[in-house]
Length: 359
Image (cartoon, rainbow, N blue to C red; front, side):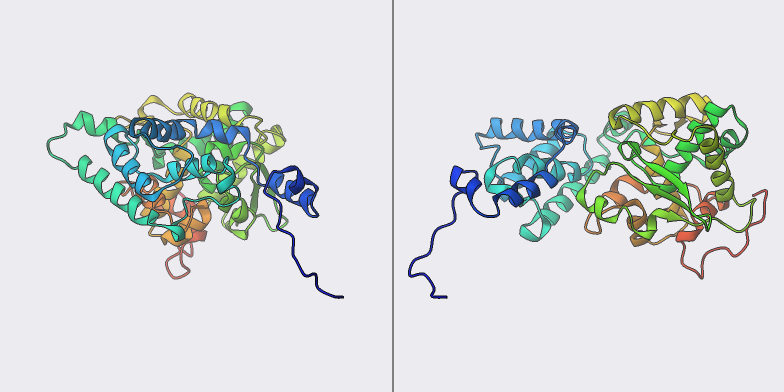
C-alpha cells in the first residue's frame, strides 16, 4: 500500500468532526467509565469553594492549575482553615480541574508532575507548629484538632457483647460497627458493601463505593479477606460470631442505600449503643462513624504493625501521609485484646501463637 503524500490532522476534542471520527464511540465509552458521580462533586464542594474563594480574592482563574498558585493557596489555607493536611483538597481539585477540557483524563495535581509532596509537607509542618505554639490557649487547640476519636478497648468489648447477646436489631448495628473497625472502613464505604464467609471461614467484604481510584484497584486484593482464628474464644472469632448472628437475622443488613446518611446513621448507633462514659475522651473528642477507621489505624499502630501493612489494609496511598498525620493516635492504649483482633497483620515473629481467654 502506497503511503499518502499528506496526512490529516486529528480533529479537535468535542468537535463534530471528532465525534464522527473512527474511535469516537470508544472514547465516549472510556469517558463514561471514569466519569465523576454527582455525589463526588457534592462531597468535595467545601474544598472547591475554598479554592474558588481564594482565586476570587487573588484575581486568579479557578479553572487553571498553577503550582505557584497552589503554593499560595496552601499558605492561605493555613490562615483560613482548620484542616491538618491538604489531602482532601488535592482530590477535590483534581475532580474540579478535570471538568475542563485541558485537564480531561489528566489530573494535574500529581506528585510526579510538580512539588506537591513538598507543599503538603510544608503545610503539615506549619500546621503542627501552630498547634504547639504556647501562645495558643488549650481551648483553641481543641477547636483546631480533629474531634473524632477511637473506640477504647472497653468500648469494643461492650460492642462485642451486644453483637453476641443483645436484641437482634442492636446486635446488627453493633456487628456493623465492629466490621467497620476490622476493615477500617469509611462511612461512605458502607454504601452497598457485602459480607460473606468463605469455605475456609475467612470474612470477606466487597465495597460498593470507594473514595479514590486507588481504593477501587485495591479493594479486591486478598488483603480484604480476614482469616478466622483457630481459638473460638479469640476476640476476632467472637466478632465473627456476632456478624454471623446479624447475617442470620438480617441477611441484607450490610446493604446501605445512601453513603451520605450512613455516617449520620452509624454515629447515631454508636452513641445509642455505648454508655455515655465511653463516648467522650480527653480533649472533647467524641466517637462517631469516623472512629471505625481511626480505631483500626491507632490499634494497629499501638500493636507495632508496620505502616506499609496498615496502608494496604486500610487502602491508603503509599505516597500519602494522611495515615500518620490524621489517623494513627499514639495515645491509643497497648491492649492485648485489641492487638489480638489484628494479629493476622503482624509479622510472624511478633504475632502471638496463643491467646488465653479472659484477657
